[in-house]
Length: 311
Ligand code: AMP
Ligand code: MG
Image 1 (cartoon, rainbow, N blue to C red):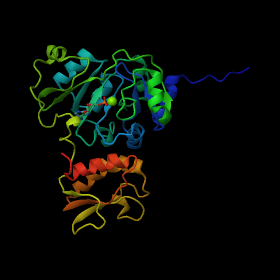
Image 2: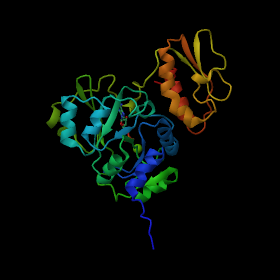
Image 3: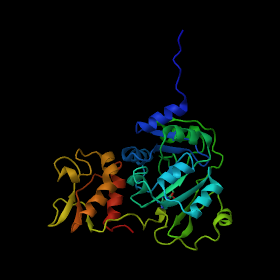
Image 4: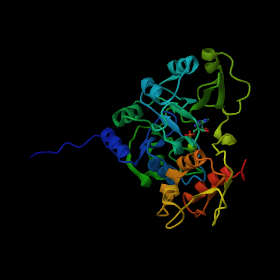
């Protein structure tokens, strides 16, 4: 009898990532819901699966430091931190080098990227087999605790995934420490299992307070906003305004979030179109109404922020 060899779980997960599907990925911190960081539609699917009402920047996971250096710009200090704590639960926010490796939606439009090499060998195996960066927020649905076992991860978001890897219970169980290394300063954005003391042993005293531009998107203010004023829920653009449409027959298809009215496509296009629209230096950017169900809630949240309604 000829037995067709079963592809192993790692290869199956790497294939699923390549196909734009989501994957349950074990890490040493918590179970992640992973997607190809370069694929905006796959990243949009993460927000959809988690039911997150807003787009916050996600952590890009890479297999090793060499891969990280292709994605982000490192300096002496970020390199020293990476050498000291990778693979492991330290996330470094650094200027983005390759905007396509970690797409705009994954970075919430920021010019920086949060990146780490996970300490879990299975996670690194999947990422290496895939060959790119994998964004992987915790695999829970929004507002629920982060899963630290395979069973919990599958129960939370398993239905939305194309593959799932059982890596046993998470050794650390809390999220990674997040530091920013930007503009000549190292600042602690989120405490985690790597302590302030351990960080200071490597890079000296941390910045007292994160400068504008380091601030954790949890605190929101730094999110990308176009220079042009943004108006939302607009039916008819004013003179000199560029209209960003949504749905069939609304405005110029070139400037449509989704000509077919698909929310996942609209999420995938949102940051790129805001950026490109801004680059044409319009008097203003007018956005037609986007329905508020599913991903629409996160899209509208982002648009409200761009329009200055939310701090
Ligand atoms: P999670 O993936 O859910 O563990 O959360 C990602 C964490 O990284 C959040 O605390 C974000 O605020 C933070 N983060 C991700 N990207 C950036 C960035 N470019 N600048 C500052 N903080 C970031
Ligand atoms: Mg989480």
